[in-house]
Length: 443
Picture 1 (tube, one colour):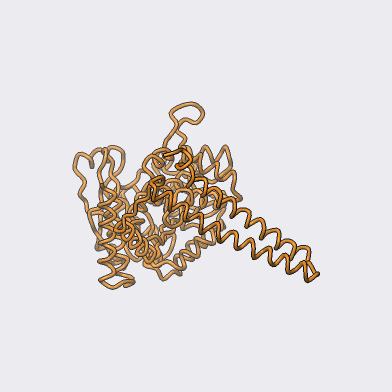
Picture 2 (cartoon, one colour; picture 1 turned 90 degrees about the vertical axis):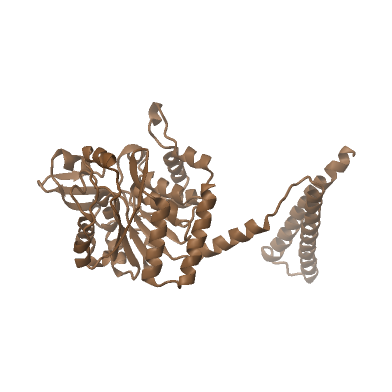
């Protein structure tokens, strides 16, 4: 076969593309003369109208003939296209179910929140994560100080948790530099900082990064203001800064008496308030009670919106206590603290882990000042809090974390049963869907 025979289909495609561009130019010129220059002569009017019709005809011919050329390329094997009807049907079915899923708002920050989001995205695409911006430690704190931007760390983790990305892309965005001026700085933080530099607001930067990574749902900073945490300890000392509060509470051997934010009248994002109003369920935690969960609820309008919401409100309890924050707290202690700051209407239910931690690991955590959060059901029942107890611990590399898949499954069952949003058939559909997706992910 001659070389020209191989090239003909590709040349034809390019030719029709050029014709389509010509048609667009003809229409643009004709419309410009008619609208901008207001041609009054009837003969000229007819000419330019005819010119527009000609342009439309050229575009029509270009598109139809161009498609024929592309099909010819496919038939000759120059472009390989394969369609798996079963996979396409499954994908469409899954997407349709996810879009119809319950509207869930999650509020918090830290590793716990992003861990939970990884599981939830398999059940619904109607997720809004409202994330704290009080972090002032580590790489996020450095960028906050150097560039004057809001801390990107927790937001980056939530975006990645909800993203539909290749493992290599996630590994790249989570990569931390090993030396130099960027030592211990995350590439994902720098990516978000760069996005902030080309955006009007930090909110826009977050949404642009979410778009690039094909995020399921939405990630929102709780406020765009330069929010900081301030804590009064029981000994009367005032500590300012999220990273210093637990550290100083331990050093001074004094518990946190009162937590506040600066500025006290920080304004939340309008989209966050809208999401709370429309939510079927609101989830607080998991994460550091004083430095991840409560900072969001101390934004007055967020607290008020959650209080007024008719959503089913769930607190996901931590598995272990946190030194300097919740030393000696049982499950009821966490709930009581939320009620003290946010009101009784902030919590309807607690999801707590059943103690299944190996003795050697329990001892290791105890040496670091952490112990298993004890589930005191009787006290919680007196507070009129629904209790869901389940084995949620996932032990990996000597660390205790929530099992994201199991936690998401328990959350969805709890939400659907208590809000009566779906009939039993719908619940089974979602369980089937999630199991299929999880099996696919494991492969």
